[in-house]
Image (cartoon, rainbow, N blue to C red):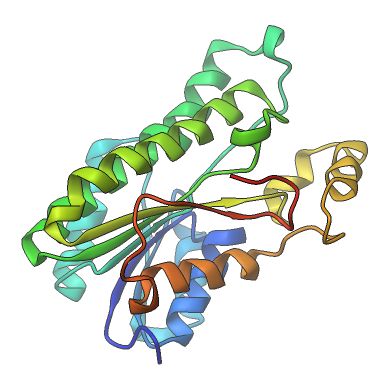
Length: 243
């Protein structure tokens, strides 16, 4: 049981990658806070695993909501060892037609939300003198193949990780980013079929990623097996792009 007794914070836990991450850590003996803006979805994920997993509704783009959720986790489990920030949104907008509100929403959840969660999680980890933070970006940040707001937000996550990894390393806190390629999640349902097929055609391994592919890498990065890994962007994309 690789993560026996550890406490894990997971955002975007109501579906897709976040839900798979909750499953991965729960199966490895961790206590998990399943965080999602949809509280019912978060609680539904938690119910599968009983008392070792709790569901919490939280808007990661709202600092006060994140602070309240963090306080609930600390009060319930007493600590936070591992943070996996999976929450993300997107929309299919051509750059020239992107409304301000869509830009603000995507940046607000994907980048600001990751920043806020990292900041609040780091406050707890600093008191403990150790911790592991794992953010989730996207291969789109490297290739530019995607809506401008999405690519920009995920590139920002990669830069954020590098910066805070350097700042927090002396305090025993490691920070890394997983950079998935196209992954079979509900978010992909809004993408036109021809885009999806073009993505698969660009993947040397010949298939879309699955949420479990990302969850297993998160488990590794959070473990003692990765004790000397920090500030890294780990591509999990079937070979379609290299960092």
